[in-house]
Image (cartoon, rainbow, N blue to C red; front, side, top):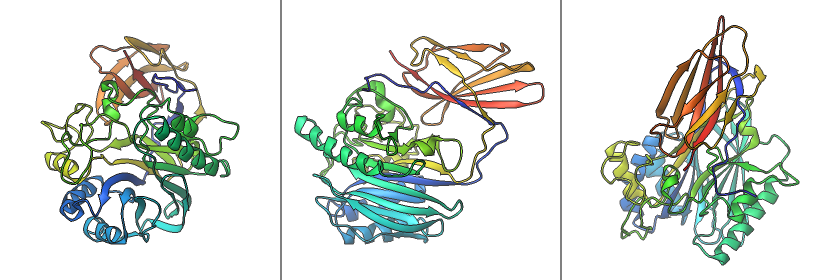
Length: 407
């Protein structure tokens, strides 16, 4: 059972400091708001600006309405970005549907499957990443909208059908589930069905941000909200109210968080246009530090949702050894202590924290070989990526973990 607090992994894996990733694949998800019927032609230019800024290799969208919409989006939004883009034919399921776009010069398409639920079909797309010759399964979901027990029950049905399906995978299968989950808080049964440890964990999903709590209309979670980009309802019929819900998410298999094979780069996870400072206001209100002005304006007009993207490395990162870096307490309120592994020839350590936007917010050095005490000072509430670099007489070692700051 998950509880309404941040739940952060305390273990970190060590990598050599000179280890690098030579190439990546960017995958993205975007609810494009009843396209093309809801003023779709008028929104094409803004959608193209957003896609040019994100520059994805793989894109899943929700709320596609017909084949005309697929062709319009491909021809007017994706191909101007790169002429290697193509799409799958429109799948006409219940209500609005998922659609899939990808670069043929980087991706080989292996097949698609559409999973029926009591609400909308779930799209599954099997791909081969050319550079790595690794297979990846990408799912696009659009769960039942709105609050209330009956809607939560339908979301649980959808999540259960998906979990039962992914549980049939062999251990180590690489897959991501992206889209508009319409989930309001992490204790909701549908979210627990997806991420909880069950008797069969082959299909278990993980949240790369690991943000656990009550996301709905809660300013403590403003950095993960993706809907709505507007305050007032526009003629296209999209929702208003400002950014106050974490409806859109990217979840992944355990294998994509391991240190070998395909690797989801957690610090690349981006909610495009969310700078953590636009709670309950429009994405283009005042100054937005996450994106240029023209992109913020395009996000406002293009859809009532923000797109999300993340990068996958397509090279193997060799593991030297596994060690434990302890961060306690985690979540922290005023302070946390980081315990270092012991090195006889330790010289110094550097502790760096970045927020989910990739901005460095904390950078300290210490000569204490045992560890370091992090003081909160003026750091805002949220989830941070923690990088610890330990220098010894002849080597340098890097550790990564995460740290949450709560009230």
